[in-house]
Amino acid sequence: MAERKPYTTKTRQIILEYLKSQKAVTVSVADIEKYLKTEGIKVNTTTVYRYLDKLCAEHIVIKYPDLNSDKAVFQFAGEEKKCTEHLHLKCIRCDKVVHLDCDFMDEFKEHLYKDHGFRLHCSGDMLHGICQDCENKKISSPQS
Image (cartoon, rainbow, N blue to C red):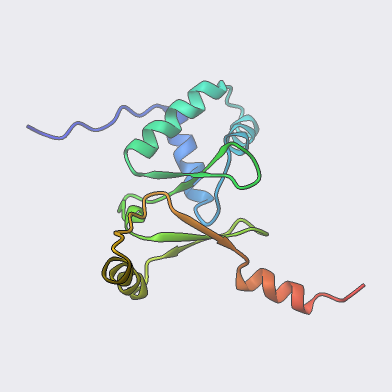
């Protein structure tokens, strides 16, 4: 039996395209609603959440807790759906997200399991810090 493709509406496609265009950062539902408004699209908040839930279930989008609020933020994961296999780093200043998909992660996972008896599952996991660009801006900015 052939795999069924998800039902796609124009609004879902526009939300997905927006998430793709912002794939280096996380976005909130408010960000998405603001974008849709600038595009002249009226949609209620429940509909946005419903589309995001479906995209998360399809592993096209990743949902993270927002450190600054009790709400969630979202990021485009891509069609390759490999974001559940590695951790993510998020800059607390510029919101940039880095995918930690280097070979070191395999060593780290192995270390955790062998030395600590803990198997790491990376789905939706994010570490927070300051990226090098923001750190360099702080160093190079004039002192007041």
